[in-house]
Image 1 (cartoon, rainbow, N blue to C red):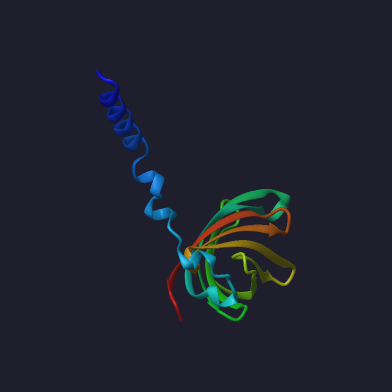
Image 2: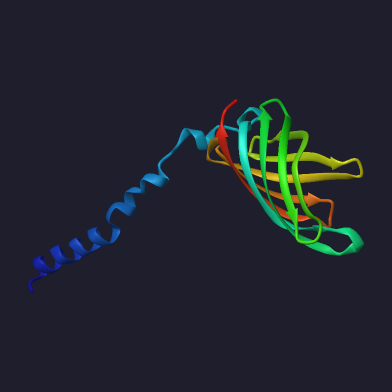
Length: 157
């Protein structure tokens, strides 16, 4: 193989190896939604949430728990919800109505506070993704509660 042919082969191999990835995939393109700061209005509408984790139960033991929640954010910092949560020891609490507050930061993180019982205040840390279509959460307080959630917007109210 001559030098010119070898040069063409190397150029073809290099072009094939770099290919479209050198130009960036469609997922890498600038999307103005990604650069827009989040606000309380980013969380507005009704979300379906699936939760799982552990929590304290009677007798000082820790139980596993699972649940589903319908939560409506008003876009102004308040939310209402109806939850159905089942504990491995305490059983199922059907259709528990509740509500709370939330505050969204420009970087699309948020804090939500919910008081399911007079003696319990839950603090969730949230990450808002896909322009508010989805939310990931972790319960940070009280310490014995270890729960995570995934929420998907059902519709805007």
